Length: 565
Ligand SMILES: Nc1nc2c(ncn2[C@@H]2O[C@H](COP(=O)(O)OP(=O)(O)OP(=O)(O)O)[C@@H](O)[C@H]2O)c(=O)[nH]1
Ligand SMILES: [Mg+2]
Image (cartoon, rainbow, N blue to C red):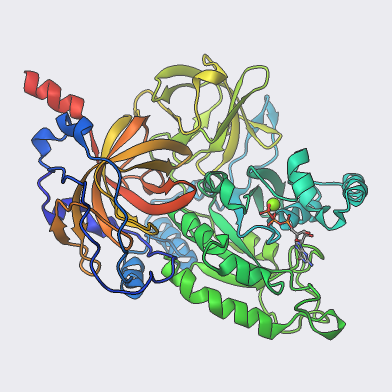
């Protein structure tokens, strides 16, 4: 690459600005780093220079932000989405042209599955739902209550949780205990790892992921969001809690941005705790003014985070504790001003999400454990997997055979894209696998790499970043260390064209083209080829520094081979 603008694939850019407030006084350009040496971006030499990259950034004042402009760009480059109407129209058109048999409408007429030779239950559309938001917003309470209302947690178990929670003076946590299962989570009332549950309705099978809200556990939250189609951003309206969650340092903002980057298409904003005495009106009525006030404060920032408020975001008042508006619409005596659906009705009516049937098989391992063999869990991102198939785990190239596939407790003969599944594998030990490894089919392997060029939006960083900067990269279910090997260019915020070639440093608010070197080989794709495996977040010391998309994968070994010939 020679730093020319067209190579940066600006059209594929789908970024959001910082959630940080405007930096401290002064518009002055940041001071040049005293110690930083620029790394030349010349293609011919980059791999040899890898060890010579200079050390981390020197502190400097960040510039004034231009959130608005970036938001405009983010809007323009909205991810290609297929609306309900468009899907219907397209299906009808294809049918009329004879391109589509009735059977081909996979989502409209879900596939029948075989379980151990017997007729299995009909698999419906699968929807992966993640609950995100600030600490104590009520994510686990809502998730647990949904499990209870849909019959996944029976009356006796609920009574048991209630008794146990009472003993620990945590009665109000009884629903959260359906999801928070460890002693530590229950004693502290804080989710630590993503809780997982499933339930079904007449319309759909749901996998729900209950993310932790605490800042320390953001990596788990990202893991959950990367498997989700839809996120429920839970916002507590309790006096003081909304404000804490929304302020700088609050997780409402960070979670929304991370969810968007992780590939969540639809955001439901659950304005929770509407029943709380600090906000409800006389007679326990839900306060429309407080609801509207919170909604209005959230809207501009969700727009900035890259969500289209008209098509991607829906607000609804709920109470995770009383259960009102979760399964059944809130009673008019409690809330006569809300005209929309209950959460579950809304989810049931959602059109199917885009699924990648015809793409090469890609199954990133989100979790693994031993249970009479090696088990892996995760979302089947693309392609289908049949029981008995031979696959390859990358990057360690282990051949494996799929012994069993499960969605929840149901055993399947075949998993479809979008399914959140558990598989038992033969041929590999659990300790040979890592989260983020990817299962592929032999005839179309994902080629692991340690190098790629990416466009990164620096969201929140106090100082400047130079070549040599190291941080942690989160992509699909992988978490790996990486280094900014060289900075190639800073892009103009408006035009997305190269503004400055081979910059010495970049700073908060910049969109920068970076050659990234991973500490270990990783299975990723170019964003334009497969967005789900081509967009990432970078984090440093517990903070989300930026988000990025992969433009090009680089294989220095190919070049060396070619040169040796
Ligand atoms: N009044 C009222 N309290 C609620 C509601 N939903 C949750 N709570 C309370 O809020 C507290 C926190 O609930 P959790 O469900 O544990 O919150 P969380 O979002 O999962 O918290 P983390 O896992 O720490 O991120 C508990 O005491 C709940 O009873 C609600 O709708 N109304
Ligand atoms: Mg929780």
